[in-house]
Amino acid sequence: MAQIRGPSGYNLAAQSPFGGPSNADSSTDSSPLDKIREQTNKIEDWLDTLADPVKPYLPAVGRFLIVVTFLEDTLRIITQWSEQLTYLNEYRNIPSGITHLFLIANVVTMLVCSALVIARKHSEYAVGGLIGVIVTQTLGYGLIFDLNFFLRNLSVMGGLLMVLSDSWVRKRFAPAGLPQIDEKDRKMYFQFAGRVLLIFLFFGFVFSGHWSFWRILVSLLGLVACVMVIVGFKAKWSAVLLVVILSIFNVLVNNFWTLHEHHPHKDFAKYDFFQILSIVGGLLLLVNMGPGQLSVDEKKKVY
Image (tube, rainbow, N blue to C red):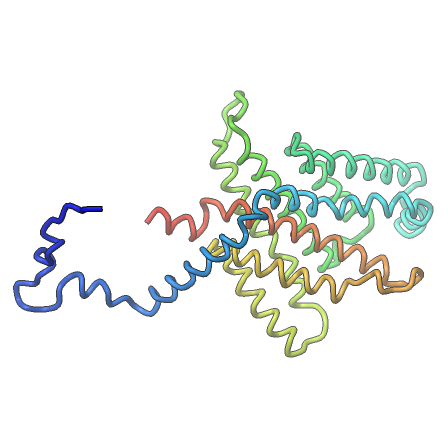
């Protein structure tokens, strides 16, 4: 196709009157940082192309994985009803009638709210109910001073906040009512809080267990990815890296299916396995939605 050629087409506009290098020549001398950024952008474009077939399914998979720990907990309470009552009554000194109400309320709330999250219905109530379950179980079972349990549950809450911001992304309008934070701003702040809380699990992983070369290597990679997720720099692919690390760790360490039925650590390994799955679900929502406006990635688009 023929193009209209102005002065720049004949290299007239870029000439320096003093015989020095032209502007066009100087602009081609990019810094090493620019070259690295160019290469990372190419890699991102290539990964985007590979991920295109699965992108439509990421929100549904992420939402299901986020609530899978609540579904597993519901099944655990139902199948171990008498043991749960005994523990709450004898070890936590909770009166018998209250223990029944406590377990029934937890089972009903987890079932109903998990179904709502999967169906993308009434997400505000569903997320509020599941966060309420986390808080009441932490107090009821006396786990408030267990650091790993606390950090894991912060990460699960982060995943639930990602569900909330994802539901606001999909809303076409906000209901009229009393003055409130703008829908766009509310989504931005909850998305930021969600991605910050999501990475707390990894800090629990770093500061627990025995140190080895591979543990140090994985911890360093994971910490770099966590910082990138927090500040929102290349957040999508940092989240992908965390998904890979946590998934491998989950299969190798929390492999409850290899333990004997009456092994004392089987239930703990199963609980940890499904909790990490929930956090992976939150990271998948982050991959799908992006880091939001409070991030370096979004600021780069503006400037």
